[in-house]
Length: 419
Image 1 (spheres, rainbow, N blue to C red):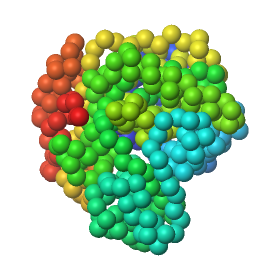
Image 2 (cartoon, one colour; image 1 turned 45 degrees about the vertical axis):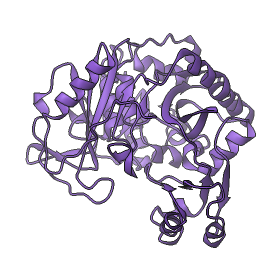
Image 3 (cartoon, rainbow, N blue to C red; image 1 turned 90 degrees about the vertical axis):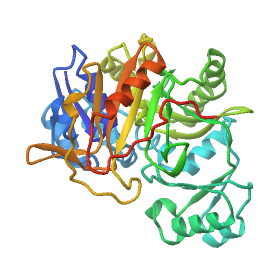
């Protein structure tokens, strides 16, 4: 079978890496890919959001399955476009992609189906929002409604920070049109966790649990990022908690999809707050969370291609999905200055010095004059597995230290439990 993976980050590298292990997959393309993906697939110079060219490529090359990695092309309707040309595509259609593309859409969905989440209010007028500062107390959670690359959330500790954040979001338009509508939520307290689920029209199957680290600095300090590391399974999860999440969140979500006519097929990322009142939904995403997927997919013992096809064909219930008992930890190496401004083109050394049982997933890399250089904020994810969590964590940091580039930065507390 021939597969096209759309995207060029660490998520897509981990997907390509796992698909390459399938005996049913003969050929993998990735558009646009990156320097690391090029070792495992043939990279195609087409941007992930250039839907017409992607459809043309997939149709011309008789692609059997297209796997859509990033959220933006999903929101743009890439799955609808591919399926209109008879190409099987893994990922939700444009209607379902609103679950990530609009915070307002998701909050209304959660409220309508009595799924636990934070209280919220919506604002389209900056002055009205300024007059309502502290509506749920502080910290005040302020979210741009649309897509903002995982960075459109401001957690203001006081009124001054709230005013500055509102001005940045609605006045200066830091996140563009994404900030035309703003959602304000009560601040939930507890431990954040992530659950990725395979979903088709009839079935929702949670993957192994994971935790990620959104803030740029140790101790969950500094601005939000796309994710500075992850581990799986979560040390916070118990069988009792997993049952509660299934009963109170996942099954009501599936039933909500059915009631609302949302033909969701793909991966649903459920961001959770494990609060004293029980698990509550922070957000939905329409795709593998990154870097959570790097740790989760490393533990998948089943054929990922078979799972993808079963979801597309609404036959997920027929799949027996197996997981390794190993633990996995991923440490993200980021460019200095990220998530603010940073320089690109820094040569990377040590990529071939990692242990053979660890994997370096490329997120923001490129080739320049025959060597791998930085080409993004999050550059690499160093993923290692072990029989125990502590073993996997020690290996991940030991191998991360072997890779260097000018300005390299990573969190030292990835894999520790946050309370």
